Length: 171
Image (cartoon, rainbow, N blue to C red; front, top):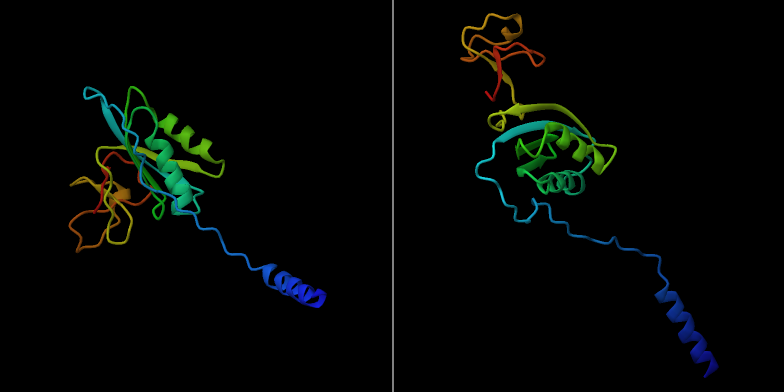
């Protein structure tokens, strides 16, 4: 009997103490917050987009930034695109400022930085190569608008062009 119990105990210990760990799988919802907010129909809304650097993943980083911005009082719409490192936000100008948006993003984690913040009339659509480009106004003769090929109908500005003739829109 003692031998049988000893063997059973050894088998139990040998099979029960495996160091085989399986990773824990967690499901995280990445959509914007489902919190219903009252939006002022008489408010003046502005659209801004900016680059967010420091994100390492779509589920953790981009989704948490998007959710945090979306739950801000006065924010009508928020979308963070991890692949393009781009945040697009529509907000009530009486309740939110671009500085508030930047502070909110950088407070989530100290690795996130905001750059290239600009107010837009519409969120930029992507070009075939994934970039949005500045397009010069017709007839612009500035040096920064000379970057084009003869077959192009639109003159594409150089990326660092700051002239008024360069309008930020997709080509």
